[in-house]
Length: 288
Image (cartoon, rainbow, N blue to C red; front, side, top):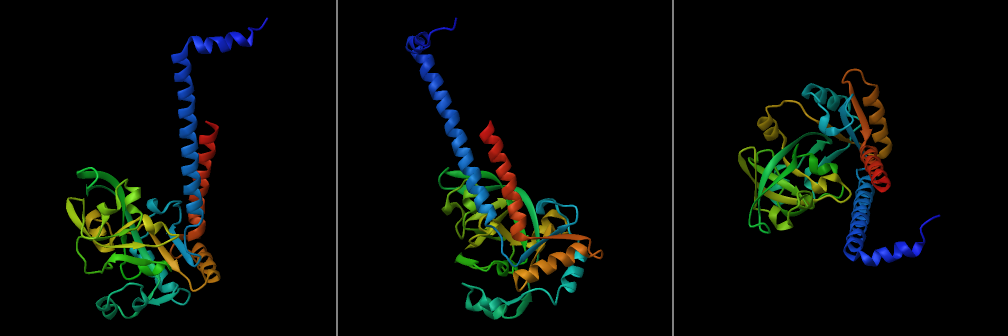
């Protein structure tokens, strides 16, 4: 014969401390699960809306992640030459927020095929909140200063100035990079320094690029990052076409070309793939 329910209820009040601890434990687990689900969902929705319609990402043929891709300089040169009639062009003078001197120095049209190199560094940042140098691991992107800003249609300089090819030990910081590093906005303000690879790098500008992963990135001149890492290759390329239809033609061309042996995917599709990965984690977290 089963135990009457009133015995179980009576025991709850007899062992009040154990009951309270049990309730708090269950509540804590539920709260953590809800927070993790909400975080995963927010990140998933953000990634789904990431990328430009006209942009294609180009990586080594076997790579599925841009950070694990390796593109040789010769492959980049060949592809850039092959796509001259299919890619978009832009004038640096059209850059929003550029100074008069910047426009005068870069008042010419450039092809929108830009290389990137990424590396994760252990960095130190002076944190006003912590009252000392905060140590964080963050991703640094080596970019072509003349082209990277033109790959994002809503790119906007928010403070300071743009990077230039001639800059030494200088970086630009996206508007939400501080959040990715668990810092305060003022910790990554113009004039502040980031210490990595044994050197201090001055923040010369901050920017925002809504709807783009660049909003949370830290940029430095490509050649300087190659020098630090003693590398001559690249991680990935981004190609901008005049239209979304043109982007699809570029993707087809790259994926069927045996000369460069590279793989292309639309930028939006690339980030949607990441969104699906987070969706899987969210589902597993919900089950657990």
